[in-house]
Length: 190
Image (cartoon, one colour):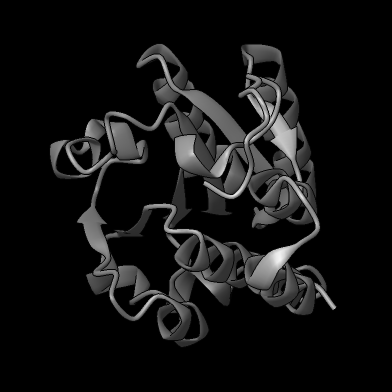
């Protein structure tokens, strides 16, 4: 572990975290707001690269890939060793093959992907019921309608999710400004 501070339930800790990249698929992205999509995909990619660097487990899901396509190439490129898991349920937790892949000894789940008001929301609520601490990365989630994203964020916050952002998660995972990991991750956000 890169830091030796006491683990607080208010911050993401790399050794307690796992990242879920939910349904960032080629046909689904074409329906997202074009002004927000590039930054969202970039932030998901930054989270994935940081997770790979810090050995935070990553789970990638694809909602009905026959209809919605595969995970976008730019995200697959930064997670070459991760094989996406297909699902048809909106909540990832409703798919046994996904819920079985959650790392039991990791109490924190970091959520990124789409759509905020459907799959992200339902997954977040089910993760809370399962006893996980849920961090929703606000600048790494998106919905077709920004009002639906805002509503989903409010609901998740009210339910007990931690609403965060990409840079906060990265620097909470790091804990201190030193070492090779810090140098690499600093370059990711420039």
